[in-house]
Length: 373
Image (cartoon, rainbow, N blue to C red; front, side, top):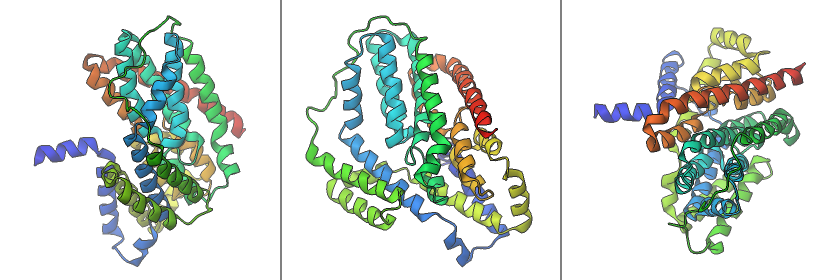
């Protein structure tokens, strides 16, 4: 039992910390009816819906099929690496950064084994991780912190775009420049065929596409979230109820715990005043530095309770996903896959990952300071 608890803590450290913080805050503010107003139910419902829909796409092999189709067109190691990295950049805008890395990093490791270029796969996986974290900032559904802040602040599409698109554009340019370091040597057999589905069933795919459209309508406040939630529950119950197992319920509980913790802190006048003084006017640095320690999703939830400048905070926590390995929890997905495939190279991966992240972060911080001035 003790080993299981240790394993769970290592695997879900952020949730465990959030649960402890929630419980401790409840000692200072005893539970009452005010607790019901803490959670952002719209964000929680949308997260559940999107995770369920993406699980449906994955069950049909949509992302792997798309990846294989594009990779077959690659003629050199540089173009192959570019396709993989750009897939992560653009797919993360729709299916989130963590799902993108879960889908494409194992595929990348397999492809580079097939073409005998395992010495160069580390660089590609690092760039894929950067691409997923940076591409996901470009849309409200690209990552959990965007979805939460876009909903909580009731941002317009224009406000959201101004807060993130300049950085997404520079990020894309940086990724393309980094890809030039990959040699343009010819490659063969870049798309292994084992396990590829024979045909994509549009009859099964269309319901998930329709659900995604409903969720986008909710994101842009054209449809109440309850309608989309009911539709998702009904369709998945009919189509494939096993998809409910693919939902990251721990992430939903982590959000809930942070909602309780922040709600209670705001009800303690002294703490509320202190944190507001520390965060207001310093959202960029608070978001970036906070993300390095507790990762950008919890940082977004925590800091949002003590500022009105949600646009600056949105920029900060997206840039804050760069830096340390835990700055974005999606980065741990790539690390775990790479470490499992090449255990002797995980230390080298860690340092190279950190250096590339700090380089990108420094450039994007410079851009942020120029735009603020």
